[in-house]
Length: 210
Image (cartoon, rainbow, N blue to C red; front, side, top):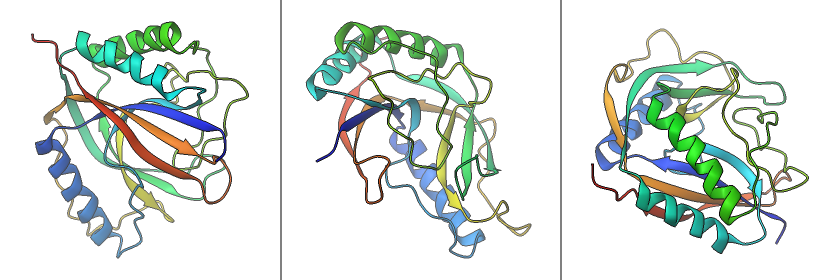
């Protein structure tokens, strides 16, 4: 087993998960089967993979944070195809998510929880190419999404081209409100080598009442 890395994300509720699944399937059909579905369940990333020594410390951080937060409500954007980033051969098909104040506040509080419980400092670094396997940082650092290059989104899949085709009949999601009621920890082993693996390691309900 290689050096473990963890990532933090929000998970959608059942209604949104079903809508995202339908959108991913429609995009797969529109691309004539060329869309590559993600390895992990649909999610909204908060922290890209960072090196960890102890997963129990990461769990402790999200346990505390989940108890302090209510489910996050967001407004969805359109289904878009983003051109390949440098270092990635594939375009990314995603559903945009508006940068609600609640999301930005969650990012700030997550920085604090990881710094306190895991010793991860919110150091500004370059984000990995979307759709590509991110390179592990030299030390355990977080990757805050505060740069203009990042947009909140939920990935539907990856394409070897930059178009789904004009005939694509995709679900209309733009302007819809949606709920993310859970925090998740994803674990990666072997990044960035070929054959790396990832899994949904833990999930916690956002349990604070409004």
